[in-house]
Image 1 (cartoon, rainbow, N blue to C red):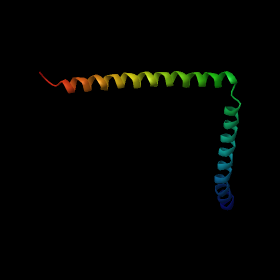
Image 2: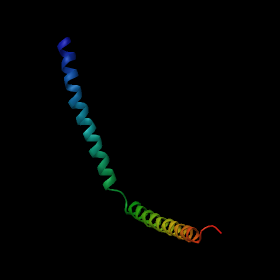
Image 3: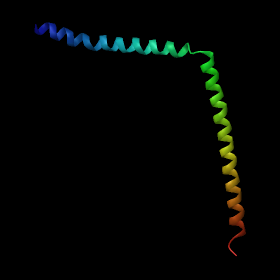
Length: 76
């Protein structure tokens, strides 16, 4: 009985690791076969985020230039 429990304990690690690898590989295949509509949606989101980033950079650049102008004028 003790040898059987020892054998089960020794096999539990490799079997669990194999099952984990199998589930991970199976999940990757589902991501690879995503629909073209999902890929287009992702690309559209990237374009929108880049536009937002450009807008925020422009606002930051405007704020910096206005603060420099105020600092150069100095207090009166």
